[in-house]
Amino acid sequence: MTTYFSEAASVETVNARMSDTTDPRLAEVMSSLVRHLHAFVKDVTLTEAEWETAIAFLTRTGQMCSDTRQEFILLSDVLGVSMLVDAVNNRKPSGSTPSTVFGPFHVDGVPERRMGDTISLDGVGEPCLFVGRVVDLDGRPIGDALVDVWSDNADGFYDVQQPDLQPQHNNRGVFRTGPDGRYWFTGIKPVSYPIPDDGPVGEMLGHLGRHPYRPAHMHFLVTAPGHERLITHTFVSGDGYLDSDAVFGVKAPLIVEFEERPADSDGPKWRAAYDFVLPPKA
Image 1 (cartoon, helix red, strand yellow):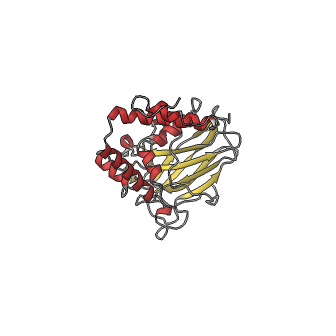
Image 2 (cartoon, helix red, strand yellow; image 1 turned 30 degrees about the horizontal axis):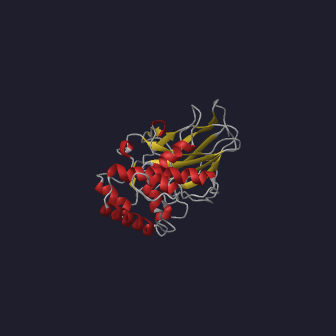
Image 3 (cartoon, rainbow, N blue to C red; image 1 turned 90 degrees about the vertical axis):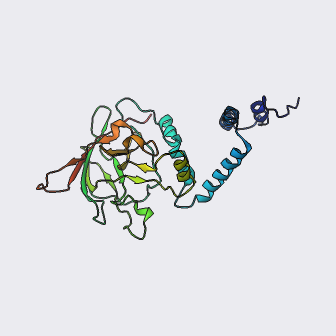
């Protein structure tokens, strides 16, 4: 029997149109999406004007996307969806280093550097020594682990945002641990910066009374044979945006004390120590 659309039976009517041959996972996802979308519309009694505003917002969001900017991911980030997807897909054993959002500024193909090298190619910013180990859940060192790192410059921009101003691969590097699992390299103390806010997502944040800033952080992608991949940041303790990160990426265990070294000491002005704990692959 044909079921015609009505407010009361909207979900059942739409979901009934799916074919029995639909991929089971697609059917599960789409039927749930329809159920939640219809519940939202009914919950807030969405007006036609509001619906038109939402369509215009999504249209502008798509038009803002390019090869170097993904406004929809930015939207996902500021709504906490990116962090939620990360959380449900990275349920780790107790003691593992927490993951956080990947971010849009990772670059593949960065050359592997010698342990101890500097990644600050322009020499701008406050030098910082990053040190630590990559270990397993029992504290045993993991050798042959790749530690891929990247950060913004002293002005809060990544090299890919300023290809005409910064050297290629500025503040980026890949390091391979030895048998002792240790890593060390020199970068700069990261600074807080705003996410791109000149588009519809930034406009939305303004209407919500929210700022666009991320607290200062260093990105890490750590991989090792036989262990789960780790995507995470280390955050600068004391940063003013730790409690209000625009993309909700901060987790307490990732906040690191950046130790200021004595003025008369040799080497970088700052030191940040952090050990990464990787669980075995399932």
